[in-house]
Length: 118
Image (cartoon, rainbow, N blue to C red; front, top):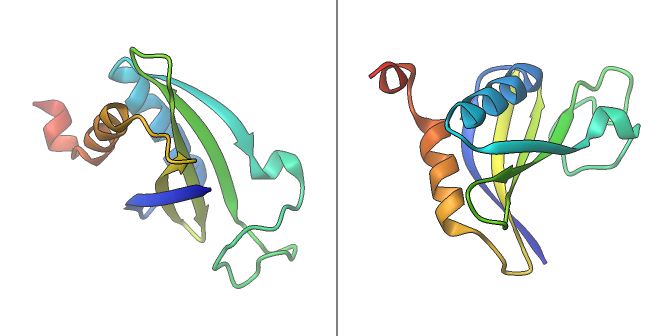
């Protein structure tokens, strides 16, 4: 069974958030590979709160990023957004998780711009 653990909310478009997440994680030495893009698959049913979901006005986006650190086991990061808001979740698959890498990802992505400059 999959379990998503939401850990970050951003007030920015999913397009901007995805770019920023990839850039920030890469800056800290993590490898990021995008494995799924909702826009590239056509219409896929998701559990989305978008009031226009499934219509032409829908601006939902969901991507899955595999994030690799020093080990072989990646962390799965789901980026889901609509209407200029984006949510980031880590996914646990069948009870398997890389807690050390997930903690590193959370720390990197929740650093403020002031923290980054220091």
